[in-house]
Length: 173
Image (cartoon, rainbow, N blue to C red; front, side):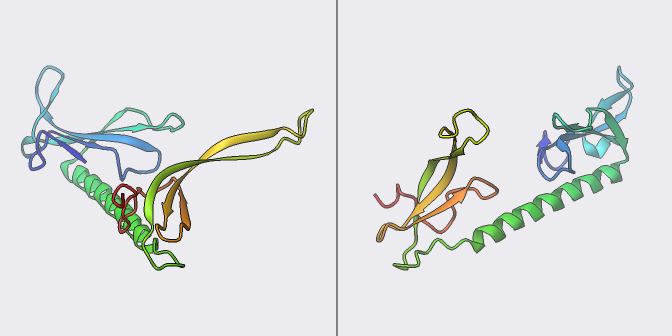
């Protein structure tokens, strides 16, 4: 959540995480009657109502249409977004804690090497030349034991790398 100009009494709140399905970005702005266009943006403490604008992805039916909300509805929307963000952070924390970087051979902590690209492929069966292969590169986050050299790989996904608890390869040099 990004509050403009300040968190205590914002005029706008820009949201990019914790949003409902199909929503990529949302903005809540606080308004009161008056001004050239009928309403004007004011700090929340002076507002009479809020305006919610949701933007969907390219395949989403959501549009950039603005919806008028009461101040309590805007507060509830922000509370739901905050709960979703906290749930996501709890899930990430749970997944981080579930990962064991300790080497099963030496008992030492593996260190982060970085991203390694693996070339994977399969034979093309529906072509004139079945001996040809179709190839692509799959990126993997790599961790290595500095004593025995055993490796542990993670596909790119919800976890941010390097994972906590293990030194990076720069720390051991």
